[in-house]
Image (tube, rainbow, N blue to C red):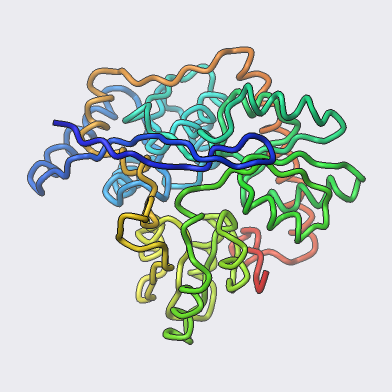
Length: 375
């Protein structure tokens, strides 16, 4: 019988915050023999269906490995979508959560987009329903609407800009320099971080990521004292008390980049535990320590691993390829409107990268450097 886990998450109403309740399936763990058989079956099905697998850093390590081994990609949500858009495959299989599948469909409307489990979602997406958010925007018509990638297609369609954690600070700084006031959604921690960095006038929706919201500044400080040589890598969806202790604050890709480039052998990492697999591959020989959360107890909502990312597995991946179900559909009109703020961000990011290249402030491999703390 399928196990179901109940999950509490922040359920904002504009500027106030309540509690919502959702659920996640708890997947079975296949045996080693079953895993080998599933992987061979998936490889054959990807070829048969002219499909490519794109996986997020937070899903199971074996899905990440399979994506790499079969010519797919392991990346953050927007890069997953861009990779799928530019790939010749007719079918994209998105191992992640629902908003990632929707973003892939928005950028590739003529391709079939499948997901191992359509019920895999995100607390930020759940906590920002399109109708309530639209009413919030209507109440503040003088503000430029900026939404984070972790939102539904319908919420993106209501926005002027979409941002990711790797470019949000730069976009908001640019808008602020032009005198624009901002309505931000949904993550209050990321919004607050950007607000403090830029000085922008920002009205914040009060959502949070249930994984990052659990990191604890007091316990992180104690861990830092225990490992005084370690650098602290923090995703900006984390609470302010955690961000203040960071050596580097950045997106998933930026944190991996920092783990490779920084002259340190030990790192404390405050983001989803799924990223440690990619960090260990990218920086072999270095040690990665999970930042403290509420702990493995009844009060721990995630224990630093997203319960919805965990719904992606080898068995349901093979099943979706075999049966062709769990297809993502986005209303054409909503998709067209949602693409506008995404393209706006992509154009800005390309211009920003050219400016940084001209100034000589890029890392040696050409990637944008992370925001280095203290924050």
